[in-house]
Image 1 (spheres, rainbow, N blue to C red):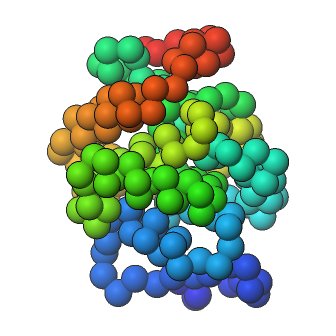
Image 2: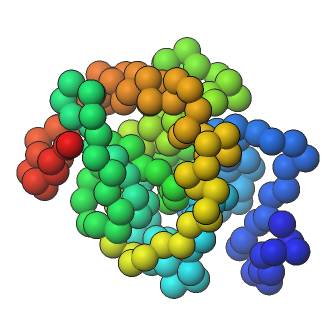
Length: 195
């Protein structure tokens, strides 16, 4: 990674993995970080330094919630969901980028334990339990256009294209709704229409 990402800042860590791992590994790596504030970004998303700063600021200003720039809201029956990018609103499931604290991380592992799921075995949708690890729904923010790698939608590369992805995600959203009991009126009050 160092060949492509040149960073001379002790606050930024580049973690190279010797083999392909599920994205949930980011939370195990995060437990080893020194900072209480963590930004985790999918490998097919490219944020500018200003966008990183803005996301970090959102987290510092409201550390009780998990933050991002993109997320999903599911219909009440979980048969459909809407994706939202760079808007200021609550969501049920963040995607692509995650700004969270060590407190959220602790809650994430507590949730996983309650669900009886080992983090290392979660092949996808690890962002759903994290999104529910704050005191309320996760929040997305308008940080402008975000560049993405062409592989972000490529079958066989992008996790969300794998068989069973949608079913697993809906299962986790349903479990989180039952476990966390957040006020769904918050989502409805923002005129979030699901398609």
